[in-house]
Image (cartoon, rainbow, N blue to C red; front, side, top):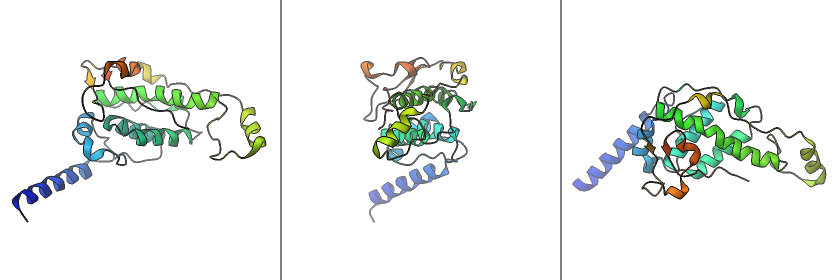
Length: 197
């Protein structure tokens, strides 16, 4: 094996070791995710668990690395947990200001995605397959209960320094595509694609 191949292999093994050493109990930082963006692209999130908070942290990971399919899949997973009201997501009280600021904006996008479907007659907890007019009538007869953001999201302060989350292809987001909602927390990121179905 050539010296160049050994160096590449050593680098690759160090990268894998770093990824595996990230504790599932401590979600990765924004800087760590950006540093490992290429390796994390299209990979499952490191955060584990079947709770609203764990799901929110997975969304955070997918958002930062620019894995839109992962983000939308996680949002759909959350939608299909009808007992998880968005307004009841517990305050994670994350000690990392950047991570906490991002987490505080995500419930807005959950409400945006979910309420779009709810207003169209597809409430949370709907079956995956709606067969026939009777099933459709039953869904439409359910009360319309729109999702709301948790109160704690309003208490999370904007970051003191602007955080720029690069586009998936690299580079700063173009001004016309920047998320206004994230900018309220001093985070410059492209408007995330959160709608599904």
